[in-house]
Image (cartoon, rainbow, N blue to C red):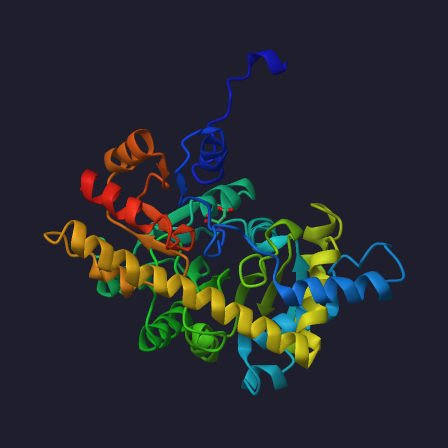
Length: 396
Ligand code: LMR
């Protein structure tokens, strides 16, 4: 049976890292996968994580299964991180959540839930969106549609086009939104736009599914959540997919959470039972170690303080790299204005480079970008900056 198969195409993001690893160029640069790198180009383990792991090594008494929903404390802490202390919804008791294997796991559980319980509803993704969104949603059985996102220049938001499309989406369909640090563009919605979207969603009875993979990587933990918090004031129901891969540097531990807002306390309880049923038939129950690390850090005031500082450090370094890249390009190619890159937020920047230019960077310079022109700004370092700017100028 297997002999009739043709090889599946490589993944447009993770597949490039495999190519990069095989490249022997001594000055190769990897700006593909959304993974944070420090000044030396390493992806560090955060100090708060190491300290939490030491505690866990001492205190952990069993490796028995977690429940189907995972660590309840993590689900509660996630909800507080998303909503912020004092959000009125926290008192209304109509939120439920499960711990998931990474943010992608949360997306998949949400997609399974929608596809199996509400089979005739489509999910709408921004054009462009994270390349894996359509894969995850289609694998769950959902029909995927697109809504416009970028303006004609490809560097800013076309909110008018987005709003017009939203007002035409059929009732009950799901809208996939990026809470902050839009992947792949770095172009985010402003707070008043979130409010407007919330009103449209409420009017048209749509369901927002918010991908919150980068909380803390834009302007700050609370600042990055302002839009979502505003949205949730306007909508009775929503799903929020959190990832701790980036803000805790816990990529390989696969830790995330799905938070669902329902209209009533009873409905939230009922939704939780359905989420558990989706989880059980997929991966049965989630892994514990990463979730225990995040819970340990968030519940300990000292460790939490260390984490917030380390997160601020990562955020600041990325922002510095944005500035240095734009300044470097200004020197190398003054006829091209790339200043829009400093307005973008998070790990990624949509450079405007075409697939041909991206290929030239890879073939001639061993510099790896996703073919859409997305740059992982976190892969830039003071050491590789000059070569990167020279290379980009040469292909522009
Ligand atoms: C990315 O967009 O590069 C990250 O979210 C990693 C991935 O799994 O694609």
